[in-house]
Image (cartoon, rainbow, N blue to C red):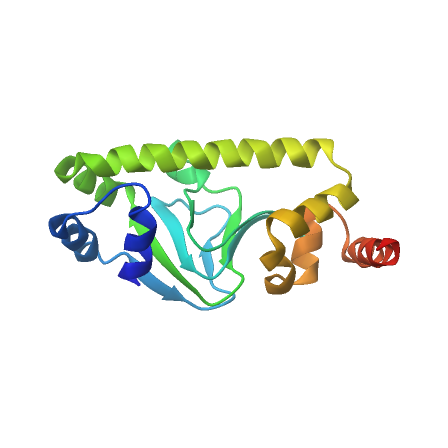
Length: 191
């Protein structure tokens, strides 16, 4: 598990053995079963997540219906809003697949940043990348039709088509599962 994380981090910084040992000593690695809820609406949390293997999603429960807002797969991180604003969560985080994740809290981060300042720089770089990616995704979603969103998903994240249940994909695209089935049929007919 650690090697997956260290390989990813090596794309940004080189780690000394002391830095690797400090990460290992934090006991942040978790194996989580499909269907596990990591965070529920109304809960407070100080935990952030990083997916080493698997898939997790965020969703709101509105009038009894799940509204998926994001999927996080290998080498993607998520810090829930409630960690930053200190209010109870407004959404859920759950595992779509059996997953291997890291779970770190703000106290751990402060301790490691204090000992190894390069980690704070690394987190800033990763946060900037994530913010940029989310802004692009948000803009594309707002200006796209459901068909364009689906085609974009096929192009940018084709793995999700096979990994995620159709009703969750449809929710993520902002449409009903039946509409997704018709949309898929229409696209196949065109090609």
